[in-house]
Length: 83
Image 1 (cartoon, rainbow, N blue to C red):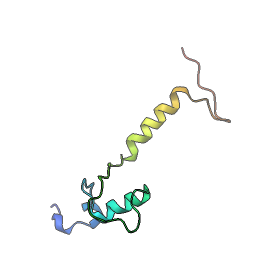
Image 2: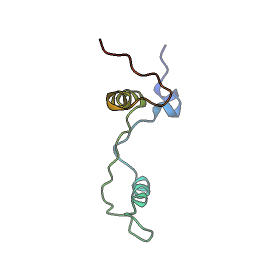
Image 3: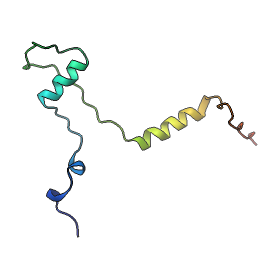
C-alpha cells in the first residue's frame, strides 16, 4: 500500500521552486553585491534560480571529458595500444 502524501517526510516533499521568496532573492542579491543594507526591499530585480543538475549525469560527462585528451596521471598504467 502506498503512503499518503501528507505523511511523507519533509525532505522528500522538497523540490525545485521557480519562484523565490523576497528573503531568498535579497540573500542572493547580497551575495552578488547588488543589494545593500538600506535599499528598499520592493521592486527587486529578477534573480536567476537554476536547478542544480544531479551528480550522476555530471560525473559521466566529466569522465568523458577527462578521457578525451588528458595525460595519464603519475603512477597510472599507460593505455593499451589500439589494434
